[in-house]
Length: 133
Length: 133
DNA sequence: AATATGTTTCTTGTATGCAAGCTAAAATTG
DNA sequence: CAATTTTAGCTTGCATACAAGAAACATATT
Image (cartoon, rainbow over all chains, first blue to last red; front, side):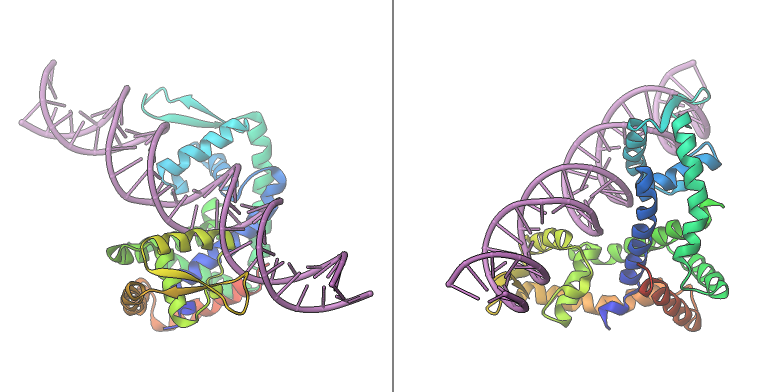
């Protein structure tokens, strides 16, 4: 079997290609690809639980976002183990910009595919991952 | 736009899912996912140029493979800047096992898709990445 | 031959990603 | 209600990923 045909390899390279693409855009805001993603998740729900990031990874990313003054950790009144991750005013401002760029850059990256192909691709991607252990 | 629908995010998670899957298999050989991939590339051509890895990244990976005695760096007679990466006997042995596992585990990971869907998926994946900047 | 330019590898520094293990605080159970 | 188990976040240690740049060597040009 040709190693280039390895699906693990291909997915990794596709992911890297997408991350590089997205990274170029958000680096103008002083953010990394993952940081921008975390910010946009924060704008949706107050919790970063959707991020599917390891808690160890998320801790460090939040550290950096806190250091640059975009988020704040606040105590959670209902559960003293937990924290509330809140956007600062500066964080809200940048987050707005990210939310504008997100659909634009998704479109741009997906432009090699026709709308129909995009839909099929997204469907198959979801099907593949949802059943993976 | 729902951040979960972000293609960069989805590709990253699909890639991580695949890497975790493959990692579980090759960890029994004492290898990481990337190390196993590099070894299988070495078995094809003498050069690791197909790996599409940053030279900085590759250097460290080769360091680890050399430390565990699976590869050796040899001087390249034709170009004194370059090196030849060679499999040691131990490296060849493990590489054989990797090459057996590779198609098996590809099949296993892709099992949520029908053969037809798999073909479409691979085609679209290639189309997407080949035109990405 | 001497200079300029390009190439190959390595080094350094920064940023994820994850396993393993810790602590404090909940939630559960007897 | 006291003992056990679970959970949320953090720390540490290791393994990619990549930008930037250094060092050594090769190639092209003059």
